[in-house]
Image: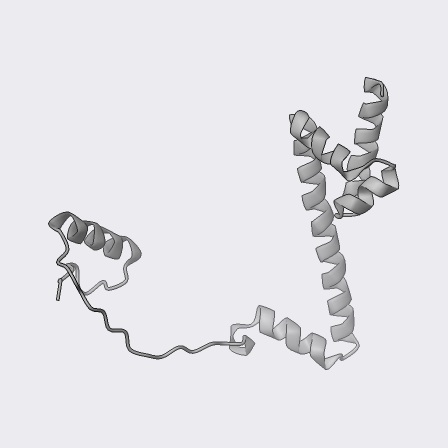
Length: 138
């Protein structure tokens, strides 16, 4: 295959990926094998970057279409669509999981001073227990 023909196929494929974020489908519509797409992606950094960008843009387009359909269903007073939207966009309607319990640990060996220092650093970074700034080995 000549370079010019390959470049045209790459461009055609990129345009198809922008419309269809499914590599197999885009390749079939362009008349190339899926493995050719991945070979091009590995051997041509510019093509790989453009393909990734086209794929992301296509996925965003599909997401926009899906959101548009969801909004249409909400406007049509579809209760399931309304519930879905509220659960995803309003904290007070979100499904919540409450976990309660007690945790006990058994220390079979004493921590080294270095380990204690590292644990104290992690606790400070994560602010897990802001009132207590030291780790005590019990």
